[in-house]
Length: 299
Length: 322
View 1: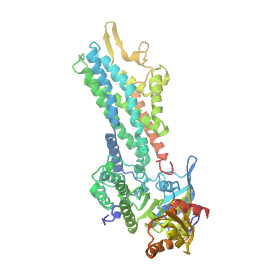
View 2: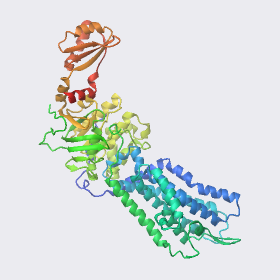
View 3: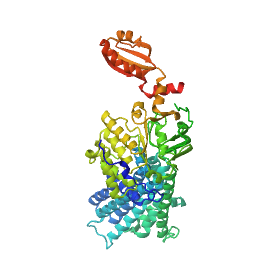
C-alpha cells in the first residue's frame, strides 16, 4: 500500500449533485455497459445461430426444389418461421435475463448501490436488450431475404423495399415481445417455462383461432401489418393463391378488405403503445421490488 | 460494558448517528434476518461482529437501501434509505459476495462504477486512477478480473466502493478469504479511511480482525443486538468466561504438573494421544504472557498454542447464556 492522495478528493457529493435530479450520463453509462454485457455474453452467438435457420433452410430449398417461387419461401421463412417461432424465442431468452442474470450472478448489488433509480436500471437494461434484439432481427431478416432473392426472378418487385418492410415489422414484433417477457420475468420465477407456455398457448394456439382472443396476441397484429403492406399472392397453374389469408385465418372471401380487423395504423399503435405500457408497468414493479442476493445468512 | 442485550439503544444519544435503525425486523419468508433491532452507529470506524447468520449482511443491505425492512425504519445520514438513490452518492458498499463482471479489467470495473455514480468522464478517470493506486492495484489494473487472486478481487471490490468518495462506507466481510498480506493491506486501507474522517462500518466474524481496526464494536447474534461498546469492555466481559487453551508439546504430563500450580489455571485435561493438554483459565491474557517464561525456565518446548475460544461462537454462547 502507498500513501496516495486522500480518497476524500473523489467527492462527487456536492450539494448540487446530491440532489434528486436524474443523472443522464449515469443512465447512458448503464445503457452502454449493458450493451457491452451483451457483447461479452455467449447468448448472442446462440441467438445468431438460431436466426440463421431461415436463411439456411431457404438455401437448402433453393438448391433442392427449383420450382418453389421466391415469394412462397419468403412467406414461409420470413413470415411464418421468424415471427411465429424465432422472434418470441429470441425475445424470451434476452428479456428474461434483463434483471435475473444480474441477480443470479450476484452482480445486481453493484447497480443497486449507485444513484440510479431502480426503474431506470430496468429501463436502460431493457433498451440495451431491445437494441441487440432489433439488431439481430434486422441483420438476419435481411440475410434471409438475400438468400431467397439473390439471382431469382423478382417479377419486377422492389425486393429491397420488401426487405425493409419485413425488417421493420419484425423489429416492431421483437420489441413488443421483449417488453412483454421483460415484465413477465419480474413476475414469474421460472420465466423460461412460463414464457414457452405463453408462446405455445397464446402466440401459437390462440393466434390461429378465428376468434377475438387472438386480439391479445402480438403475432396477430404482426400478421395484419404484414398482410396489409406486403402481398403474398402467387400465380399457380390452378389460379392465384393467397398464402397469408389461408394460413392466418383471414377470411378474405367474405371480407376482402379485412374491414372487421384492425387497420394498419391501429396495429402499429397497439403494438407500440402496448410495448410502452408493458415497459412502464415493469419499471414501476421494479422500483417497488427488493432484489435478493444470496448471502451466507440467507442461504 | 455498555452492553444492552437484545436490542436496547445504548449508543451515545447526543451524537448524531451515521446509521440509525429503529425497531427494525427483516424476515425472509419464515426465516428472521433481523429481530426488532434498534441501533445507532456513530461516525468513525465501527466493527459489526457476529457469527454467520447473525444478521450482519442483512443490516448492511438494509442500510444501503437494497432491502426494505419488514418492520421499523432505517436512516443513513439522516435520510431514509429505501428508494433514495441520491443518497447512494454519499455511501459506498463493498459487498460480501465474490461476484464480478469477470470480463472487465479492474480499471474498467472501477471506472464504470465511478461513471454509474454520476462522475463525469474526466472526474471518473482521475478518481479511478487515484483509487486503484490507493488499493495497490495499479500494476494489475489492465488485467481481466477473472484472472485476479482473492486478495486482488477484494481490493478491486473495495476500490469500486471508494471511487466516488463516499462519506459512509459499508464493508461486508472485506477480509474474508484473503491471505495475510492482502489482509494487512486491506486493514491499512480501512485504518487510513478512518484517519481521513470517513465513517466505516466493517462487518466480520473474527474478533481480532475488527479489534485491530477499531475499538468500537457492535455484537449481533441471531438478528439481535447482543452488545455494543468499546472492544476492551467486551473483551473484559469475554475474559470472565473460562477460556480453553490447547498446548501441544512432547512432555505434556510434565507441563501439566507445572501449570497446576498457577493461580489463573482453573483446570487441566489431557487430550487423547497424550501430546496435548487443554488448560482452562479466566485470565487468558495473563496466561499467554507467562507462557514464554515457562519455556525458558525449564526448556519445555511448546509446539503449538491455540484457543478453542478464539471463534466468536464460543463468545456468543457465553454472552447469550450469562
